[in-house]
Image (cartoon, rainbow, N blue to C red; front, side, top):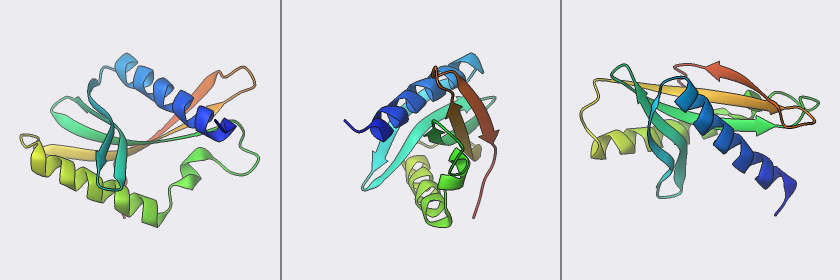
Length: 118
């Protein structure tokens, strides 16, 4: 498997642990709707959170959150909209980006961008 795939899988594992450590209730991981995917769906304080997780090993070519362009954001929000059609009961929803940067020893730094929109 290519290193970037390993980095992405590690980032998703770290994001899951980050969410648990920050008192989120995990509902789904890698939830798919057609070709769209949401990396992590969790709830906290009566709010449903959709997380797009981006991970990089270096910031030499930009920050992880810069990988979420307008097109990716549109797909992310569309997938979240599909999810709430099938999973009703949440009055409040939020779309978040969790950016993770790994150092040489895979120690993670987290940067959360909350409530993103197009």
